[in-house]
Amino acid sequence: MALAAWVSLLAVLYATLMPFEFGNQSVAQAWAHFTSLEFPRMSASGRQQWVANVLMFVPLGLFWTAWLSGYVRGVGGRVVVGMFVALLALATTASVEFLQFWLPLREPSLLDMSGNFVGGVVGVLAWYGLSGPGRRWLVIVRQGGLAALWWALVMYMAVYMLTAWLPWDFMVSLQEVSAKLESDRWGLWQAPVSEGAGGEWWVLRSMIVVMTAPVGVVFGWWLSRAVPALGGVGTFAVVMFLALAFGLLVELGQFLTVSGVAEGGSLLSRALGVAFGAVLFVKRSHFSPDRVRHWARPMVLLLLVPFLVLMGVLNLGGEGFALETGSVSAKLDSVRFLPFWYHYTVPEAVAIGSVIVHVLMYLPVGIGIWLWRWGPLGATPRRGVLAAVMLALLLALLMELGKLFMTGLRPDPTSLWIAVGAAWLGWQVCALVWRGLRGARDWRSAGDEHPSRLSDQEGRHRQAPVEGIPEYPGIEPADSGFVRGESEAGRAPQRVG
Image (cartoon, rainbow, N blue to C red):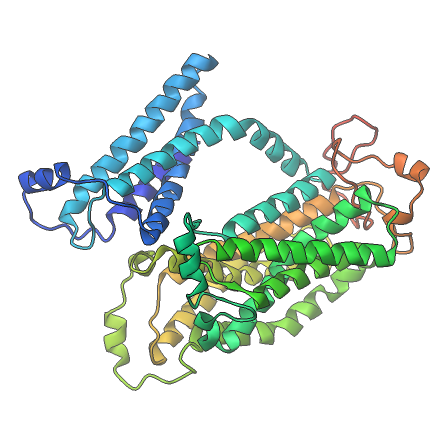
């Protein structure tokens, strides 16, 4: 935890002092300018910047509180730690805002300072308010089994919604709502601001379908327990209602943010993703490891070419694949290799969107390598994460180098860092899902009935690993070595092998 605390502080210093090109002004000039600052009126764009500053300092408050809380006891000790961390956040933001006077592309602001300080306090409160449930959740995830799978899916749904609304610059007046209605950032099918995206728009909508599918699994799982008497038609109707309601909720949040783009096409994509996930849950008995693993490598090979084509479209097709007619070396000389430099030079909403898109582009690399390693034996891959990371790095390097030869595009070395992290994340997501599936007991075979048709007596004989967690009848594990479910009601899951 000490390492995380210091890394969060260094990350804040890096983000707030970039690009580290200090001028030669005097300290007296800087102090005079700093003490003359006034608190500006928060405009819509200023609110976006303020929220970004809040989010930037939350990890600092969270990790420093987590580290220092281990050395104190009682309420008094926690209060002292909380006050110290809040003062640390205030001192950090005051120092960096003062130093920004020497940076030509930076401007000290009391608005930024207030956001940073609030972010540090939110981090403190988040640790004291969520550390208990957070620890229990981590224990459940580490144990594996049904509980881990259920809570991982629920957390995914929450993160999905919160990420869709970034940077959370919600409108606060009717005037802003009226301005949004008159803007080009919404549309019944496609917003005017997106009309130039062409094929990229359809690719992103397809990605939304895939990303929303886990939400449908959550809804299907919950329905199987909450309303087991629903028939096929009734289940379909409820799922479609929940799918449309979820898509509408996310798009409504997009509309209510100043920088968000609300589209009917995105709503339909999210609804289709939810419905697709619910169907996967209903048909889960057909996806046993022994069946799926034989198709793992063929599916990876089958999807490899479409994946590479989509990568080319998303990375190199922005200007219609027009070749560069000028000097490639001049473009290369102008590239800034400082990580996240180009994210700093664009609005927060654009920077966040760029990071999310690049994560989604390289996430399948980790997933594909995991499936490739898992397929032959259906056993947990012990190696391969390094291969996934290196392959993502090579692919990102090729994509960024290709931008040198395309008109209107420029390479961004930060994409290499994002690709590495995304590939690692894809591998870990597969490992987490497989761990949850492997940890379940009382898996049902492919020929068994739908859970909604199980009798109450049969249902009582089946125990969930953790009380209150819905059961996920599924598939029979193929090999040992992972956390299994409880052997008796009330016993904690045990590691075997």
